Image (cartoon, rainbow, N blue to C red; front, side, top):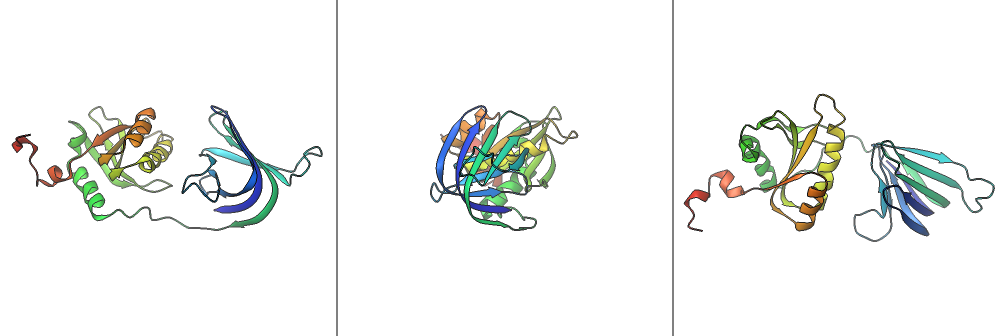
Length: 229
């Protein structure tokens, strides 16, 4: 990972346009090619970013580009989306090899929920079958890789509480999996005990199916057929 702290101006052009005026920010260039621009606030979310596949090119400023030390252009490889970062002053520039990430360690309920869904994969539909739990990708393992009743590959992300982060995580997995001709097309399912409305809206917008699962029913503790209401 490369980390750059710089006074910069950022412009995004493509399906939408966005402008960040000159200020000191943190620029992260990850091993997967993604580029993220962060400020010192706003929690974990970048101010702007470009997801892979994309290509970063760096050029020296032109004579009429006074005050610049470099111009970064991050071009999406599949669309016309482009992120242009004008660097006026570089305060810090370092690169670090983070190695292979073991992935997120789930809490007890979430991990058990994944195991239960793997054992009862027809929770998602009749005729479904499990291909593999923790299916490996370059950015971490997919919780469940399945085939539906038509044989279509489906990536399932399992959460105890479904939030926007989980949808973003599944979106990245789907982008990678759909590059594999042996798997594509790959659909996505976001499964959780509770799914936040914002996460559901984002998932539906991206063509991801949301499934609310009953942990107790999967464990056999609660029999829904025996309820009075």
